[in-house]
Image 1 (cartoon, rainbow, N blue to C red):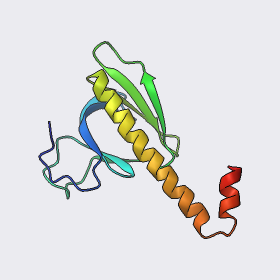
Image 2: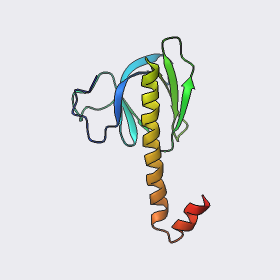
Image 3: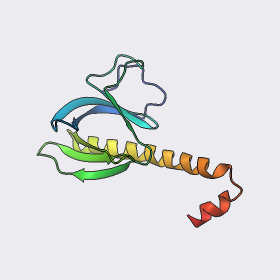
Length: 133
């Protein structure tokens, strides 16, 4: 189902998943919006871009765990952020999990490239550094 909200041009992917809480480890049905550097989540599909999310996950240097155990009928995966915090998710269809993972992977690759360019653009050793890596 396409989003009714005024999706910003930075929106990469959206949809419903379950997310495990951090303090109380129960699973909550949430609406997620992936953009170019974060995933934000909401209790319901936001009406417009200005609606504040319940939470935001920073994606820079995050790691994807593709196949995380889930009960029958769910498809688990997980993100671990650069701070070490883990975000377990459950999708309701296998194909939906694959779409989330490939979309997040695309964002991570773009972020990684952007950071590489920032790291080296101001240094004369940029070419050498990049070859050594």
